[in-house]
Image (cartoon, rainbow, N blue to C red; front, top):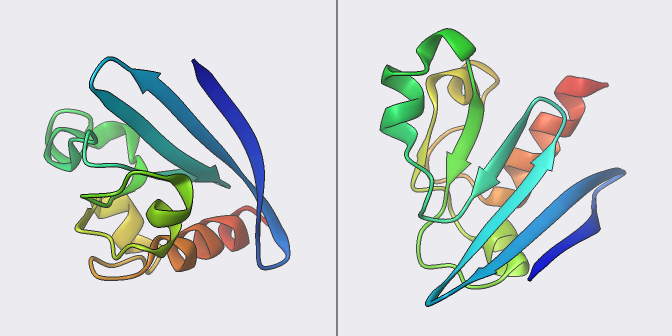
Length: 104
């Protein structure tokens, strides 16, 4: 099953996506030019093999719900996310706010 839901983050609306798979759940929240995701995200791959795409993304580990993803500190972020001011250790909600602001 796939759930897509609007999420209020400050004055912006982000989009949450939850994909229920056998033995795991994929979680992502997107706003503006980027997204945050659960531990399934491979930040190293994005930074190295897909560097030319300048993907703005962050990864949080150990999360089981969209709300936990927003509240968790990001374990790693892409180089392009860092260029926007998003850093490892920052809460997902703050990263999404920065992404939303970048789009406005």
